[in-house]
Amino acid sequence: MTGTAFSVWPASPRVHPGGPPHAVRVAFVALVVALVAGGAEAITRAVRAFSTADPASLATGLGFRAALYLLVLAVAVRMTYGDRWAHLLIAIPALYTRHARRYFRKR
Image 1: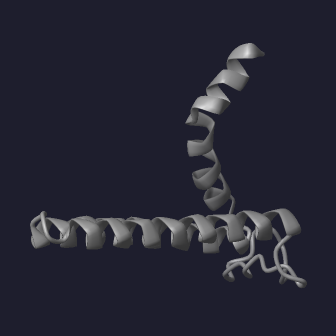
Image 2 (image 1 turned 180 degrees about the vertical axis):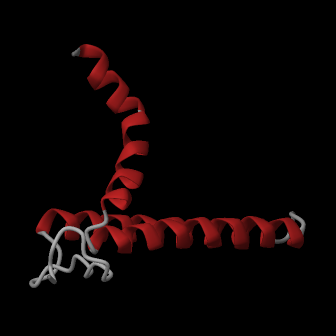
């Protein structure tokens, strides 16, 4: 009995035959653009502060940002594969923005 709900075989990945839905693709591209902009901003700030700041602290800050951006990119990639936990992990922080709090307070 293959294909039953209680199969012991690993589940096949949820890959859409034509790629992810349009909304997911747009969200992924927006996240990647934001990550690239954040990386460019971090490098620009580090270059401008290089003469006055400690190089070790600059390297630590850049390393931490790079690790965080890579983590967000990995979650965004999992989102394109249809993982629900990735959708939630990316959507929940958006509910805590000032705009969202104002929107839900009015309702």
